[in-house]
Length: 576
Image (cartoon, rainbow, N blue to C red; front, top):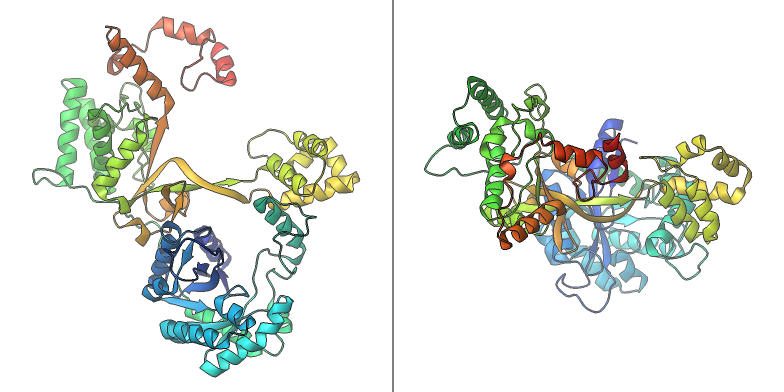
């Protein structure tokens, strides 16, 4: 098999991981989506929840950009139970795409099943007008009775209109024997039990990756459609570019270049921090500036300085610095961080290394209650369409997979709980590893058929995505509207990317961590209460880090409310 397509329902979540894995395996990746099509307009959001299906495949970069826009608009504007497009929207963004009439849930197959031939014909002609020779009538045979009825009707319609047919197979799992695990996963997602009769289920066990021989047997009489599938695949040749940076531009004041402005901020800040900088300070700053400039990260430093400056000048508490960014004297001089890297012998190359070109990453803590004000400032400065929060995926961990599978199989709770508690609570533990480590669990898997089946199914769904949510800190800021670069979605009223933080970085997007820290909020309230009672709040820029009383307090175990030291493990560690 030299080509493979991904056409997830209504989203592009898996596109980048799929693309990379195909390239790694020497297979041509075809990026696509099986989109939901609204009955009328995407702006009509009442009445029927039914939507048609349509398969779209990227021929080239233009098609990829159009697919990103369609997927984004479907979520952000068209969502009604599911992300939806409509045919008018498709007409505006059809360039560079191959279109297939889709599975049994497609509008054309449904119309033919209802004997509404003229309507099916009009829709097929409309799509033919949009896509020309890049529109194909899709033929499938999974053994479903309705498919066997509609197959000859689809073929006849294609012949009448001079539209080529393609033979495809819906793939929801890799091997035929995975059908049961996919059914279990469907029950977990929909909240049903496997033995329920009136629930959503696949109508056959044929939704696996078939060989050419299997497809020819399944599509006997439609061999030309099988051959045409290769033709459609050959039309698709997309190269996704990794590493090209999409940093937004920063505009320096007073006609200065950004490099001049960065140098001025650093020089002014160095005098503010040290009074009269030493030769060591000046040499370290000059070295860092040369690295920052040569690696092309002048704008990055200025962007981060700008929103931190906004926060500090608007009374929004900002953390002193977290992670490797605290090793930069340029950041310290600019006020991005408040930790002196010279005093603590911090190594700048851990943050920016000229020998290893990668995006720098300042993790910035803000007051939990006022973090959103900083995000809104960034949106206003760069444009709300240039800023998005980032998706994150919840996955089924080992114990969770066992509990979820046990529930949908109706295994008594106490039995499932006993099995789940045998799994060690180690980071990244897998079920196969747990069975090796725990003799009792291994024995049950070998001697108890119900446990063996439970564990087998749990291993198949383990690690799969369970839900999406908004990343607690990640925000992406882009040189172009984000919808032109990555697909978006609406998640809990926030617009987020469909790609993960790691994938965005690989694509050259500027990712920032705006961390909302409750500890900073507590400190803020404490300082306000001190002022109200006539006292003077502490000066955190001039703290004495050699105060013996503080270390006595920590080493005694009195760490409740102390940031990152109040957990049981850290408290005991401090005492030892």
